[in-house]
Figure 1 (spheres, one colour):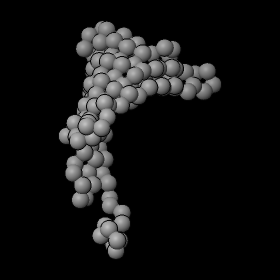
Figure 2 (cartoon, helix red, strand yellow):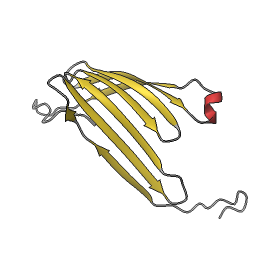
Figure 3 (cartoon, one colour):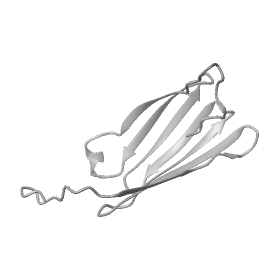
Figure 4 (cartoon, one colour):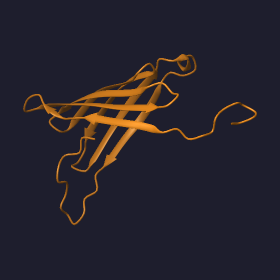
Length: 125
């Protein structure tokens, strides 16, 4: 117990659940829904959800949201078998929106290969 702020500094157990999958829509398109849920004693439930449409394993278009907090969009492009680049934007739904116009992120992904063998399976997560 902190005598100055009245806060409790003890650690709390956190529980996480991550769910996701990739589903073929047709020969060109796939859908990748995901969810990340966090539960901590004394804190509100936190849940992130997203969905991405994947075109020919090259272009990723997606929407994302955090329950009661924010929403966003993203786009990614597979440059090579190992390198992916993208851009994301999210906007808060809380009172912080009075002080900012959202956040932009640059997305870079590089899959390492060893012994020249490449990837065993596509990387969706």
